[in-house]
Image (cartoon, rainbow, N blue to C red; front, side, top):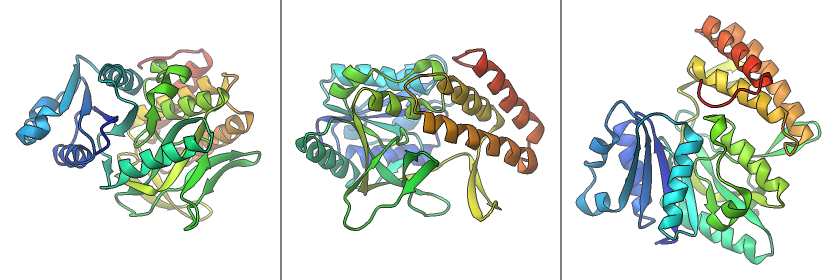
Length: 304
């Protein structure tokens, strides 16, 4: 039992069965889980009542009165975890389900890396995408763009430049030095910004090969030919506002690497033209992208 880890799940109109499965898997590995509900229409509290009595007792619910965004919700959970005297927090999306040994693998790797004299900000698992069943890779920034690193049998972990927030194990000691999540971004790029802020302060990020979770990217995925067959995540149009706006905001921050800015600008260029061609809601999607670009250059932040 990883008693020094407190997972934080942020919910917004969650799917009942997935959330319950995630909670049951987490409570088999830790003593306490924090659920921060971001002003759901449906009652997350009613879903939690489906847990058995002992499990329900070990879930701490923070019910926010409206959707304040992912960053503020994570920070609310982090504050409670500090009060509970946790050593680590595990950030989780509502649709992520850890495998039975994920937390033990993450914690062991974190401690092992620190024992080697490394300053570790966070470690994260690989994720298995629900629809493709394919395991993710970890990402580093090179001069020519982003490179994905595969896990080899001989490598228990991979040094990465950033990891997704869901599944990331972060020490509260590191958070005290790096700072909490950027609430002004609201959603999207919160994990990217925090990881690069951590690296700018001398910390490292690692991907842990034997730690695995189930996870979904986007509302759905489509398979398209774009130089090769690619599985593309498709979101609702409003998400593209935040993707584009927050990218522009991060391009203007000095601690974000120049190589990442260059790669991200190219990625946004491809995104724009790709969804202009294939999106079923192309008119509103493109409008959201353009508004995001405009607001980003005008340094607007927070909720749309």
